[in-house]
Length: 327
Image (cartoon, rainbow, N blue to C red; front, side, top):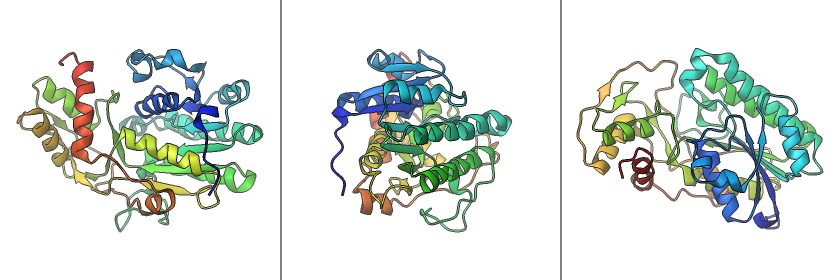
């Protein structure tokens, strides 16, 4: 096992820092005394990074992932030794409607970032690459395990599996110390993508409206609380220089898959509401069943989720009450 990483002595670049996971990762890194550099394309005042005031405590580099030089400048000028690559276009529907911008952000953005890490190997000691369970595509058996081939077919899913291939290329060809995180559906305070089932349902029921389900309600998924995702990324970063971690992918999951109707029912029970969901059955190009085995993360990293769905939703609810002014 490698020497324990001293976060207080590190400088971490976080791409996607204005996103839900990025915002909470930045907060945890700051709490550990890490100097944080955030690549920011759009300074969204509703982002938790800005609402919390954490944006004033980090070094902000303005730029886009797919712009040559933006990430290289962030790494070089701020001497980042750790890179968390969370930046991406993450909405499945957006990717289906406009695949090219998704490929630009998720593929071009990834190879430009990894090439900057290659170019500055004297600085960058560890890279965590945020992928997704979507990279697996539709498999004949579940749960997903890391030894399965990646069978993605649709735009967002393909952008993640191709991004992983690029990360593997830079590891095996150039020795870039990168590890890949595959999480299920991440939820928690700060997610303002209302098309997603957790924030969309919470907003609806808190406003006294019927929750809307885009699918038939029977799609099965893993749901991972954002703080568990943060702990997963940190666990990978702390061990990425070890041979059994570097260049490998790791699943992170509660290993308790549920369908969409069950998620809505738990939110209604938590909020004391009972309005019948509006089931649209309009979801297209999505995989009916997805869930992950986290056995490798347990055995190699000693990682385990701290929040089950009920606990995670309970921790999430106050953030949305406050955001919507319904506290």
